[in-house]
Length: 151
Image 1 (cartoon, rainbow, N blue to C red):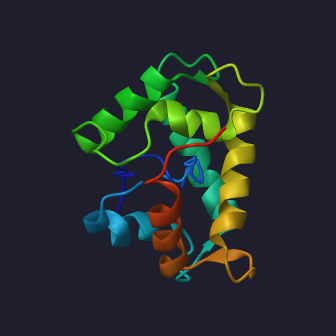
Image 2 (spheres, helix red, strand yellow):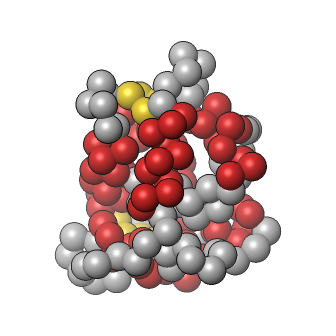
Image 3 (cartoon, rainbow, N blue to C red):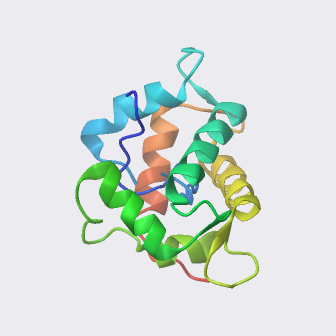
């Protein structure tokens, strides 16, 4: 996929996020989303490729370019990217932010987003090889983006 057609931000957050991340992504877009992150086309996503995608997502969400992403900015970016609001059962933007908001102020800094994305990558890399396969990305989406944050 050429333009991060994300339905949440699971991998970016990863999700939350990820979103957090990690970007939550429409199942129909899984193949394209994975391909857009796999910039060297080797069939897997490295930490560097994931970090680059997370950085692009943060920039896209930070509408006023103040270096911070609020829940309303995240929700607006979600709607702009997908054309609709988050679906029932998906984490809210505020929940995604709580997952990686280390100082508890309710907004994400770029540093918090980078740290959260790294943590989510490590959680999704279930075989510990330093890369994400399509199966690991899908499993991470299913596990992390359809639950409530518990912070």
